[in-house]
Length: 53
Ligand SMILES: [Zn+2]
Image (cartoon, rainbow, N blue to C red):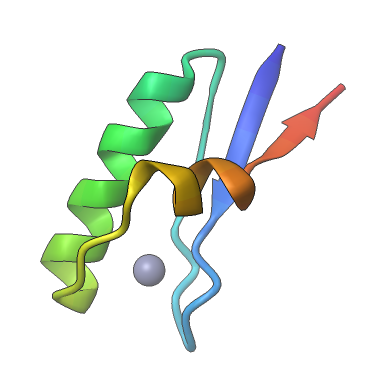
């Protein structure tokens, strides 16, 4: 099953899709840190993931 995460911060169009939740988490954390200068925890990221069918 493919999951997706879209960055919800203003003016940001970052989106990542993968079958690997762990990969999404690490990519989103890296994005949040590099682009927004903030850290996101795994729970926050997982709760904002959507499932693609
Ligand atoms: Zn972003």
